[in-house]
Amino acid sequence: PDRLLERSQIRKGFRNPSALVRRATAGALAAQKTFDQNLFTQALKASVEDPLQSVRLEAARACGEVDRRVARQIWTYVLARNRSGPRQEAARNLGRYGGRGALDPLIHVLAAEGRKSPERFEFAGRKIQVSKEIAPFGMRNHNPSQSQIFSIASEEVWRLGTAFKVRT
Image (cartoon, rainbow, N blue to C red; front, side, top):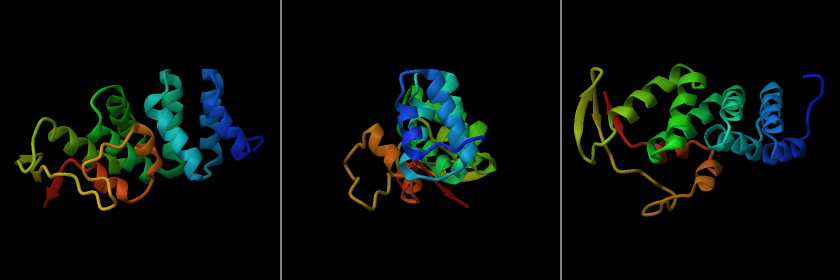
């Protein structure tokens, strides 16, 4: 980039009412490839919730550029936990920007759709068991809000978002 944006500028850019500014902000974050949890959380949220698809796609691209592994975990979580628009966007983002590691989450979360714990089945040559969620840090019997989902960018997200367990 010609000029690096400060964190405060990126933070404000994601909250701007102009879709053009939000999209440019996501592009700047992708170009800078700087991981900041708050900025990354804003980009993840925009990647599945922004009203305009062009902003969602640019935000998803930014997430893939900044930290594909964490983005993949959050998108998997959204895919496993949601039912409508955010779920579709998470699946699209996994497919476009999740890399090779996104294939298993996509296949297994979608294969487990409509199944209940502790059901077992085979899919694509793999044995799958649908499990209740494992939530080691106080999330049991609690449905986190969207904002809480996006603020947990860590290894724990994979376990929280898993609606299945692959047995090999």
